[in-house]
Amino acid sequence: MIKKEIAIEIDTIIETTMTLDEFHDKFIEFAELNGSYCYGQFKEIEDEELQEEEVLEKILCSAVYFDDGVTYRYEQNYLETGFVICGRRHSDCFRTLYNLGKSHTDYKLTEGFVTDVNRFVDRVEARKVAIKSRQVKDVNVAYELYSKDLY
Image (cartoon, rainbow, N blue to C red; front, top):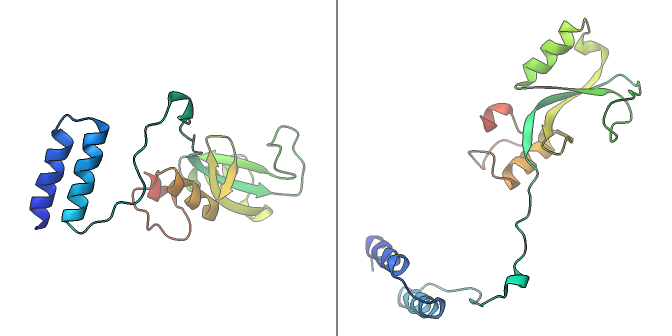
């Protein structure tokens, strides 16, 4: 059977109104005829067995962590020292710093992102978050995440 015929057969299965058992039988028959293997089994589950969908952390915006060794009273709990500036792109974060009369050379800095749970992550961790939450258009993004990968 060629691929086009397989696609037509799958469309026929999907468009047909049938019970779960009928669908299961048809699916197994189709898989056996085409040399495919079916892993796992269909099983009816009670409503109480259904689990809520996992809420995934998402990248919210670009951010730069500037560490000057100073503890800031209103900064995030997970930061012992320094502060985070957010922006649409990383250049916006630096522009904000410069507008405050500061220079990036005065700080140990880490480029990254802030997530929707207000957590700063570096570019490497951000890539993992973006892939897991399916925010990146291409799963083969580089080792680090860049804002251009998101939008």
